[in-house]
Image (cartoon, rainbow, N blue to C red; front, side, top):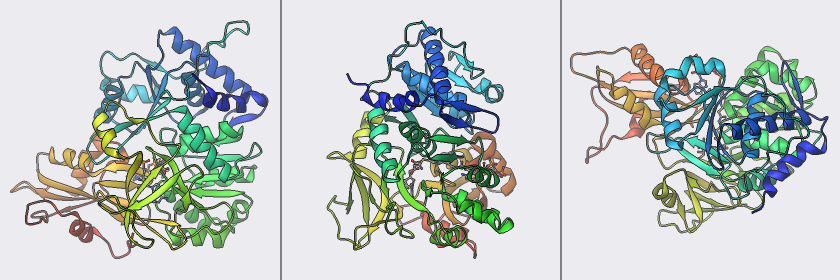
Length: 502
Ligand code: MLC
Ligand code: AMP
């Protein structure tokens, strides 16, 4: 069985060994060094007795050793399961148990905080200084992941409380990301400023895989800081890719440091995705830097399926047309295509579709119709076919700062609070986060829990970004005649006068 997809990644590393592939504040890692370090990881993983298809969970920041480890996992024919380091006890345990991780590799600082939450039988190791480099005459450890095996399991929230593992093959990643990045003219001379986390498809697949496919340099950051992005561009970065919240922060930075606009102006390309980019942000950024941000749309389950053009009109509020190789349909509830201008659900198909949800055949089957993946996003097409995302089928999915959050998961945690009778969690349109997490809480009779106490309660149990940013006590939740909680009136009640429309 072919390993052509893996070879395409490897070729970018082998062709120019001296090329600086990863640059951080502290180190420059050449293509050759990354290749050698990944080999050492492959040997070490094999040495632990892991066998083809075993899942290796990785809890790590965005640093070069995590990239070397990821490549080592692929070279050893294993499955990479990156986990959000913001996850806490139950969230982390769920992923480790759900994927049946054979090993956990963890940054030492994170391990110290989280060890007590691990399933007791799971062996773990710190991701530390590279393991001893392999001897040059040693036989190659490579038995890399084959094109249609699973290379990557990305955990993503859904309409149920618990996250699901999305199975992606090397073929899907390389074909879909190759097509997207060719559209965007990624080139070995490009330098990508990357401050996205490496456990979601935005930072990991477009960022790291995209750079490997094209043999580009990545200036890699553990955290997003506007000043560091400006510094990257001052030092030759050509492309920046971010979620809309990051562009909001870049605009704030430009307000305080107007001289930085001239530095940003030197870039070749700015792209945005993972959540809606508000036209006001697009336009202000263009006024200040001369760059019109290129917005695209994707999902963990499909990779990046729609993009505005590289050349031609980058339309405000639109996410563009299918990336070469992909197709899109806009359908009504019966699955029939609707006319342009009409609201419908977006269905997509093409090279980036997932193989399914890990260990969930029924949910996988339910996500597809005749080979089309039903995204759950509601869209409208302009007369020329440009698509606009206008909402989501489920009110229980929230996108905050580019992270997908399940309202139900937060509701469950709130309901466990001794003073909470009931709770409904919603996404409220928000200038900074896109949507902020709002909670309507019905207190137990005779109690009046404070917003601070309830927020702390959630923050102690879930990743920090899942805590409500607004909590309102209500005597009862609005319900329809059948007793079902109605979320739109809750969103309306939580809106503040200066919130954006959407
Ligand atoms: C951080 N905080 C958030 C948050 N991120 N609150 C709500 N939503 C978020 N997304 C809060 C913390 O809880 C903390 O709260 C405060 O902000 C400061 O924390 P921080 O760690 O310093 O924040 P910062 O590093 O500035 O993080 C902001 C961010 C980050 C935008 C850089 O959220 C981020 O990296 N987002 C990208 C997510 C992503 O990669 N999505 C791609 C999914 S793939 P307090 O109260 O303690 O101060 C996908 C498919 C596709 O969607 O199409 O791409
Ligand atoms: P995730 O599951 O984290 O991969 O998130 C995928 C979801 O992010 C999609 O279903 C959309 O709701 C949202 N999304 C991604 N890109 C965009 C965009 N450009 N505009 C609006 N929503 C987006």
